[in-house]
Structures are given as structure tokens and as C-alpha cells.
Image (cartoon, rainbow, N blue to C red; front, side):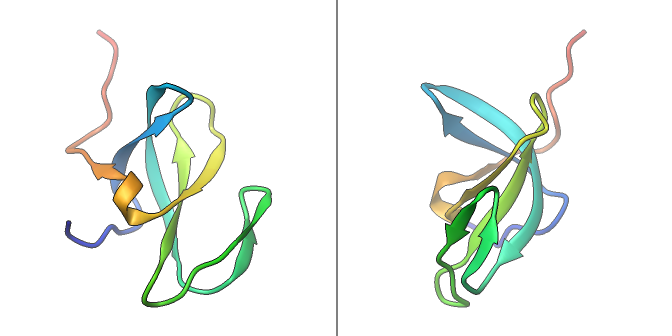
Length: 75
């Protein structure tokens, strides 16, 4: 998978369904984010994402995120 960047639209599995949102930032060191301690490094980064639906933040490993072309919009 190509590297994700801020502003990329992604999907991920969440509570038995699929969530959509936007990459807020790449995390490459241990930090506090989305209400928890995140263990990350340059070799093992994680990404802070914001849900399109709830506006909530989450942190995921790159393998859990799937880049999409654009947000889905209701007609």
C-alpha cells in the first residue's frame, strides 16, 4: 500500500461495520492521541483519523486503513 498522507480519505472496520474518514496525521513516536497512549515509531507508524460520521478520532495501523478515492455522499 502506498503511504497515507494528511487529507487522504480512508475506510476501516469499526464495531462490526465500516467507518469512513480522513487522515489527520501520521504518528511516528509514542504519544497520547484519541484518548489513549499510542505506541508508534518511524518503522511502525500509526495514523490519527477523524470519522466522517461522528467526528470522533481514532488511531489505526496502516494495515487497518484502506484508501478510497473520495467521501461517499448521500444523494
